[in-house]
Length: 129
Image 1: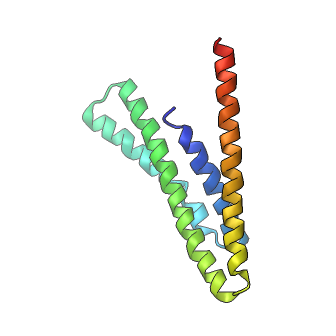
Image 2: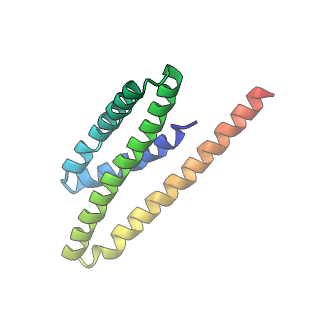
Image 3: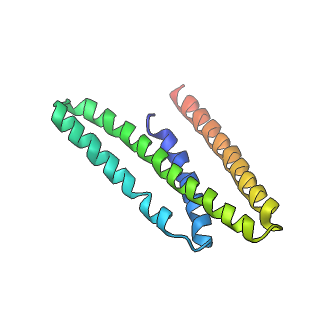
């Protein structure tokens, strides 16, 4: 349950990485996954130093995965924002199309995510009864 929002973060990060790749900007999309490793190593070092039990270490790692997903999303989100600003200054006619594309994609993603969560909750509730 702790790591479920990670899926949304990674889906949005993948979409934004695709936007960056289409603009021939690869660094942010390539460096973002490194932060998952850095954060998880940090959580493990913290657990080792504090002598946490295995259950608490697992919970801490789950929170670390979620934090890493948010960091990765922020990295590519900032990069997309910066690059789309550069694109808008090059082409004033593109100004409205970029914002429309981005908002429409987020709207569709949100609608599909809500539908998936609703169907998953129905299947869980029907299987438990």
